[in-house]
Image 1: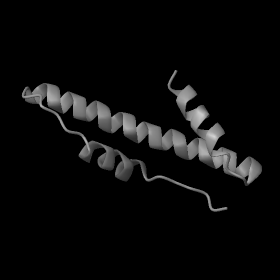
Image 2: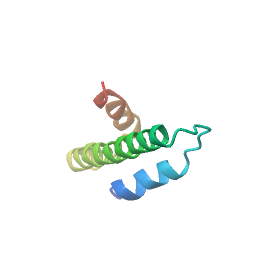
Image 3: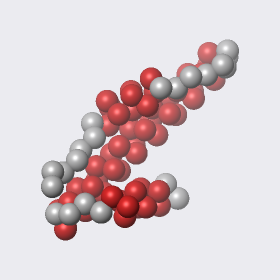
Length: 75
């Protein structure tokens, strides 16, 4: 099985490009976009770390456990 790795910047831009808003306050729009970008970037980095540890330790990716771990890292 091949190890999966996300490019954090590419992932964050992809997430940001899917965002739609009806907000008209440009400062608020910018703050929300920055928050979304940074959150997506950080999530991709955490995914890569968890996936790498999972892959290196077992060589068999348990996606269910990986996503449970991702959900728990934000808490």
